[in-house]
Image 1 (cartoon, each protein chain N blue to C red):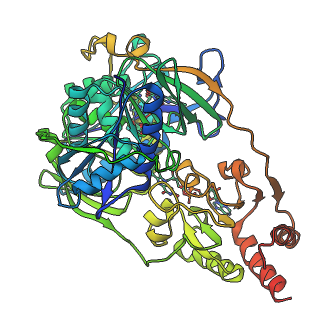
Image 2 (cartoon, chains in turn blue, green; image 1 turned 30 degrees about the vertical axis):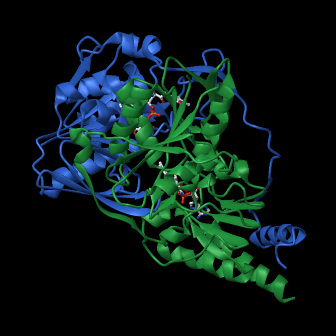
Image 3 (spheres, rainbow over the protein chains, first blue to last red; image 1 turned 180 degrees about the vertical axis):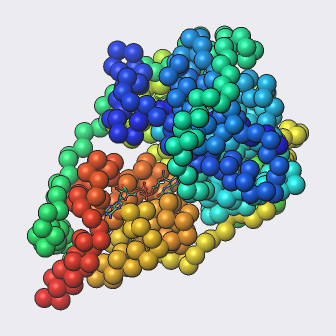
Length: 264
Length: 326
Ligand SMILES: Cc1cc2nc3c(=O)[nH]c(=O)nc-3n(C[C@H](O)[C@H](O)[C@H](O)COP(=O)(O)OP(=O)(O)OC[C@H]3O[C@@H](n4cnc5c(N)ncnc54)[C@H](O)[C@@H]3O)c2cc1C
Ligand SMILES: Cc1cc2nc3c(=O)[nH]c(=O)nc-3n(C[C@H](O)[C@H](O)[C@H](O)COP(=O)(O)OP(=O)(O)OC[C@H]3O[C@@H](n4cnc5c(N)ncnc54)[C@H](O)[C@@H]3O)c2cc1C
């Protein structure tokens, strides 16, 4: 069995994310990192591989992104992936969800995985949708926000929280699953794995290599257009107390609550 | 004709409130556009009666397409909606908040090569087209997004579209035969809507003390329970701690939990993710205790305390008791 994990490079959590007003695009100039939600997808792949119930030949990390995104692939490999695929091409810049999902699916068609894993969301775009888009293109069953997954006999038994409580769903392979962050506690890469990551096979693909119809991606193919980036509605800033002397802090909280008649 | 199609989720014979909000919104927008609002329902039992389906007319739908298919899964609904859109030429598909709407909307995006926006808080009509307000980057900005070509897919934020009766009559109900795609039948619901943990009530409480991952472990909830007892309130939770098994699902606030609006909502160790915020932002007074001064929850708190909850909560409980006793 072969698992492909979709991973994305995003601004580092410590960077304050902002839109570039001139391009209406995210300012990606700062420090970047592997999307933290994707480490759960890699860990899920590793746990299936190490669990022994399914025979996993390889785990392949796949990304679409600019040149710098190679570092996200290195990190994915240091966390356990056997090799990686980097789809990169100027024609792909500014792709929206519709275009990104299509392009990633084209790469995955060449890989022919039995299971595609994704994170629950990217930390920058927060669109929550790539998994279901990819699944429809690949004509595979799919679930998002899965927090428990057992692979056995060509099937996955998945659990997730939906609108009315927890659902248990059985999914036949091949399938596309995005995992919720409660599914596992991702491991830290060993120093040896970090050092070795650059030596693992990395396949760089252009749109031509992946047989992507360029009229369906990038600025030409996108189906959404950002007209403006506006500030959120004004809201009165709340009061902030830094807790230095807890006795004093608590007194202030009680006074605040009492003023609002919440201690009646 | 410019029409809007919505999906209406139902469970145990009742329509989902957020879906009804989407129907209401679609009805309003369709009138402005000069088109019709229609709804799709999909079910396998007999609970989708003619009367129940026709009742969607009250919220503004003129037509309801009813199809047979498995419940609680997105892909069969994608098959139905794609067929209805292709045969009847709807220009937009609109969804209320929740989880299935995201998955169905995403599936349609792929199937129909259609643009999609999500977490949408407002939809406007401009030059005969719909434009979506889509908050981004933890609600620090709002992107105004337009669609290239049709259809356009709009996935609303939980509670963004309020349900309201529009005074219109019954909707006409049409049964549609849809052959499900082969892959849509390869996911099978084994158990739906399992309630993990005790059946607690947080919706009627005037005061809620909500706990998150910052409590560190299940036992950490004792700190919240003690404070809630002192304040005369109940205890609520985030998805992170419910998924971890620290607290019952019935106490969860947010996108896949409850929506609450108490007089006081006090958060301990909660970051303030959008999916949590959407379930509590109408609370009258919001207080947050978090050790991270950059936690998003401080952006929408009336009173924020930057500090360690393990130090603050026990003392606060004592101080509240003393104040109330005195
Ligand atoms: C602030 C902001 C708002 C945006 N809003 C919209 C919008 O409303 N509509 C729209 O169509 N586009 C939008 N986009 C563009 C969109 O984010 C990109 O097309 C993006 O590549 C896909 O969305 P996501 O990363 O948010 O995916 P999500 O669906 O949140 O990501 C889920 C998972 O998909 C995988 N994944 C996502 N992107 C890649 C990738 N490039 N390579 C490999 N795996 C990947 C990862 O496993 C990830 O965990 C927005 C972008 C930004 C920065
Ligand atoms: C489709 C979907 C649906 C979702 N539905 C829901 C939902 O219904 N409800 C919901 O809540 N979430 C939901 N989520 C999850 C949501 O995105 C967040 O992951 C979740 O709300 C985070 O929970 P948390 O605040 O407890 O944990 P974290 O985000 O981990 O926050 C913990 C906080 O505790 C603070 N902290 C740690 N230690 C201390 C200390 N000693 N003292 C003080 N502060 C401390 C930290 O600084 C941090 O801010 C959903 C997500 C998705 C994608």
